[in-house]
Length: 377
Image (cartoon, rainbow, N blue to C red):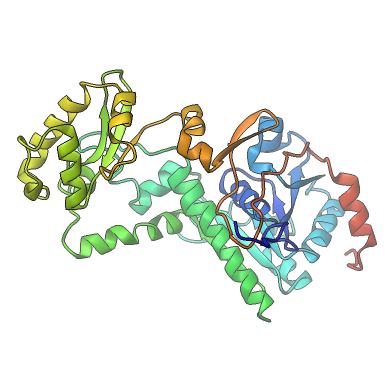
């Protein structure tokens, strides 16, 4: 953080209205709130959806304001439209057509607020043959190709739940689209609709792999490329049943790893990219890592250029000296959670806001609307 850093966050003054949903929409709203935006969450009447399910553990609602509206009632739809009229951006994650049926579709909202950035996040997108089909993270990244290299050859692909699709391909692309739309609107352009489809975003993230593929270094068949076949890229079981990771792609790092593992007599650094050595290399690495505990390997390899890290659970990750030094994780209201990211040198780093109770800001928000010049109807 630099001297003279501002408080409040880089998005201070930006107003966002978020319609309660699952997964990527709430995460995007949390990210914008973490960065200083004023996010007003319109919660569902009745069962309360995700907020009622998670209660005060709904970390994805931290830092937001909460109001409960029954969008089947015309008067509550009018209230939502008045919120839209005084907002810079909108977030919704319904199936295509739902917001239109509620009377809150893009045409109506942009007519009320021409500079609005209307953010929509779905799995399959607003159009296409699958647009109306149900699905979840694992389905979207399966179709986009992002799941293909996720596990060793011959094993069912397994990825960290929700991270590649809901968060990476959905929430983060929605956030980028909203911020791009806000910049355009602030420069005098019109508002617009952001169609953030998880299948699109997770496919877009593959462009680095497409670049490698175009160079002939990525095979479509599993186990024949560095990222899913080489012994120097992967995870291994230790003597205590825990796991470590290595990723020594560059020759000098691979050479250091061999030296520290005591394998320079068994494997030659110059044969690193010889696919004929990979199976033997995996066997040697597996046997070697199985001789010590994860902690013993951590003491030997961590902080070196071997490209090493232990595989930690959430509590271990929070307690790790590197993460602790950077305050990567914090505990708020008795809940462990990751602190806001990224960090900006011109702004004081914000700590997470608290998770609101359902409808906690009902009266305050309704009073603000009553005082606004935006007409009803």
